[in-house]
Structures are given as structure tokens and as C-alpha cells.
Image: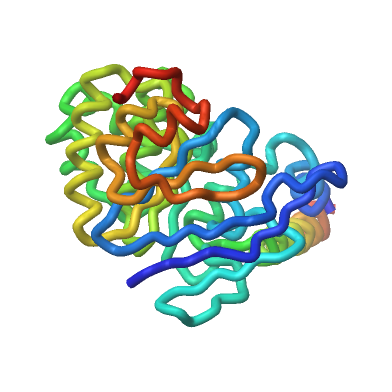
Length: 220
Length: 55
């Protein structure tokens, strides 16, 4: 199964934020997006998800155009940058709503076992981020969109989450963006760089130095 | 109209980002509005019945 988005035109205050986008995500692959702050990475993920309507866009799945927001087809999940779970909900309720096993989660993250009956607002920001990232990646969906999934996570959680991500990527298409570029470069099968509203496929991470995203000598 | 008003405030404030939670559960904004409207009418009807019974 492959997902393509192109012909995206998004204007913010009459300026074109996105204008020359082509991005392809495939089942079994992780697609990374890198770019400077404010270049439109989050907007692109929201457009793909369907929660942001641009002036123009074309989304195709296996070459067939999909005109309604993708989330209405129940095939895509999005982890946004900010916390998205209502804070009054109980953690076990949220796992039930997302149809994700709480037992599997606490098997991998045993320090969370005491939180089963806690509400989301009772846990720390990092723990909340981990739960949200885990729920999205483990949900039954064909396409997973992750906007800065490593933000607020401790190194140990990042390591465990990365392993889960690799496992889930075998059966899902994953598109992710993060400023922790070394994780993206390491994980991504395909890498895009977003600048001046256009995407560019990166064949060699050294190109990121030439594009002034990384300082000279960082990856070479 | 309370829930309709609440949804209006929800949609036009920074809480709009919380809609991602419902979108991830494949509930779109129109369905959310209809649900809030049904809840609104149910509570109004219940209030009318209880008030009629008490007074």
C-alpha cells in the first residue's frame, strides 16, 4: 500500500507556506521529513491527516484519489506536536478507546502499571507524551503520522520507542518529523527535506549540509 | 444550547487542537456537533420532564 500527496498549495497570510510538495509513504517503510522551524512540516502532516484544509491538494492511495479527509476512512492516526488527549480521561479508558492493549504497554513500560486508574492530568508531561506516541503507533491504522515523537522523552524511552517503531513499520506506513535529526536519519528508509514550501528527496544525508540544514562536517 | 455553545467555544479557541483526539477516533467535527446537539436536546427534555413532575 502506498500513499502519495502532491499539488499542495497552502497560503498563510497570503504567503505560500507550501507550494511544491510531493511525498510518498509506503507500507513497510519509514519516511522522514526534515526542515527548519516554521517551514510547514506540521502543516503538511495535518493536511495528510485531513484536519487542515489547504487551497489545493491531491492525496492518492495505491494511485486512487481520496477526496475526503483521510481520518474519516479510519486508516490514519496522527501524533500532533501538542498533547491531544483530554486530561480528565482515565488512562485505561484511553487505551480502550484506541483499542490498544494496556497489558502489553505495562509489560514494556512497567513503571506505568500504577497509573491504570489515574487520569491523564495526573502524570508528567514526558509520561503523557510516551502514552500518546505509543497509542498512535500501536493503533490499527495503515498510515501513522508522527510530529516530533521524541520531544519530552527520556533517552531510555526513546530507545524503547524506536524499537517499537521499527517493529510496527513492518506492517504500516510511517511518516515522521523531528528536530532530533540523527534519529530520523537512522530510522528513515526515505528522507525528504522541506524548504521554501517544496520537498526534496534526500539520497545522502551529506546533502543536508549542502542545504544548510546541518553545519558542515556533522554527518560527513 | 449549552453544548452547542461549548462546541463553538471549543472550535474557535486554542482547544481546537484537541479535535485531533476525536479525529484519531474517526469522529469528524459534524458528528461531534450532532452528538452535542442530541445531548443538548436530551438534557432539555429531561429537565422539562423533571420540572413538570416536581412542580
